[in-house]
Image (cartoon, rainbow, N blue to C red; front, side):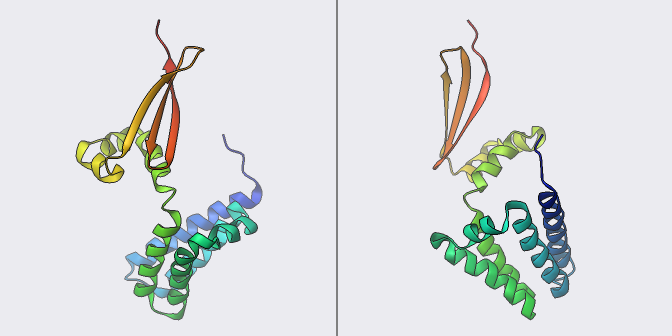
Length: 165
């Protein structure tokens, strides 16, 4: 089990409420007040979870400036009262910012019993993995079997079991 500090627990709560308010604001025909509250709670929660310094380092890396400007620009546009345009900018910026995490998320979801079997269907697997998923099996000197899956620049190695003699 993962141990969380009190500030990380508060951050998880703020982030969860932020996502809830964002979702609820979109359900209620892009209510700008709910979207603004959701944006503020999401960004505040993120900084509580990973820390203020790491949040600034994440958002203001040189190669992520375009994504950061779209995301934070969308937050600003929502705050000044244009919710639909702001949400579109935020979504584009969010995908640019977090695109490196998507293969990890898909790999995690593949391990969930029902969702994993859905993602492994041939027509869905071809779309979400772009056909670039490679799998290698290896046996260690101790007789343990490992499986390495490579998707682009991401690799995930998992324990398969003990090799049979």
